[in-house]
Image (tube, rainbow, N blue to C red):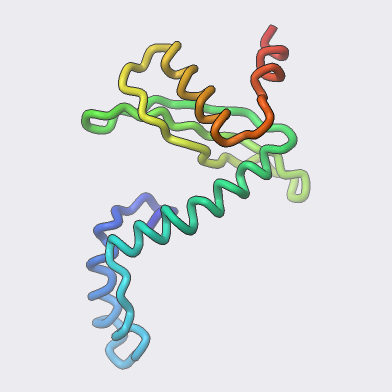
Length: 134
């Protein structure tokens, strides 16, 4: 669901579908994972695991990308990080945070980024970032 950006509501239908697809399977007959359970698994188990992994990967070199997105009434500021993985020789983009920023001025976006990084990173990276910008 999360990997392909599919609505959690789809899992309500998948539960019914699996029992029809595999009518002789006891596992499929007993399988129950509606939108509430799916959301809990993703938000409470998978998200913290991958956030921890991303923060660990950011311990060396990383870059930050942000993008403001309009979604109905709330505007989100999507924060992504790009990390170099020396073990595989590859650069990968990872999700870091998505704070709500209803007024998308540069100052508000910067404050949201600063708050997000201070919530996730124990050592202040701002002196490092600002030093390299000057």
